[in-house]
Amino acid sequence: MVTPEVEPYIRQKFAENAGLTEEQLFAADATLADVIATSPRMTNSIDLMEAFARTANALRKDYGVRVRLPALPLDTPISTVLKTFLEEFERQKKEAAA
Amino acid sequence: MFFGESRLTLPVRPNDLDALGHVNNAVALEYLEAARWDWLGRQGLVHGDRMIAVVARTEIDYLAEIPRGQVEVRTALESPTAEEFDEDDITFRARFRQRLHLPEVDRPAVDALVTVAFLDAAQRCLVSMQDFLTASAVSR
Image 1 (spheres, rainbow over the protein chains, first blue to last red):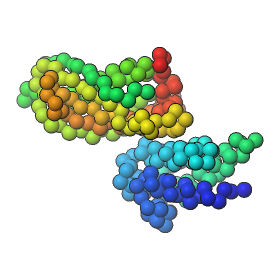
Image 2: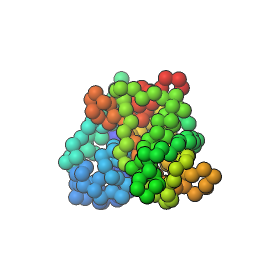
Image 3: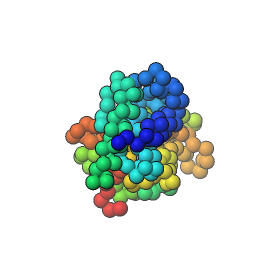
Image 4: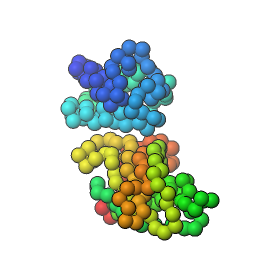
């Protein structure tokens, strides 16, 4: 059972942390390399990881679920990252409830 | 965590000077690194072999000449702030504001923002600041 409000929450938080609009991120299905190149807050993949970490930290505080993303190549589209984020969220939520 | 400013006084060595008789720009980076090691020591942190801190970015302004004598390096953790830092969070980078001052001079001679990331040297992958702190803490 997917928590329906989590997807827009992750989109919004990640866009905030990247300093980009959701449209800039998701309309063209940017790759992670595109995100680093476009974001005014990112210089390298460490800044990208920090943006993911801040999104995960917000999720933990607001939903009580701790998510850690696996390492992803820079040519990964943002839609795949979002899918991975959601899968990890649901998996961790189930584990926490078990 | 210590979020205050640390101060380290270093002597300017003759070989730190370039042909103009002032500290070479690359040597200023060495002073900053020495001050970060000092900052780690004041935290009770000892750099291990496995979890290491690496510089990921340096933004630096050279504002005044540094002649022979002494220089004071002021170092403060700018990000995460005390309010932002949470041991249960994940943070992949730390940013240090570092300034070099001549004795008795308020205006810095060098102003730098240094971004540091944390690596597992064996796995060659990023680790969080929290993992680094846990691995490096010996007397906190």
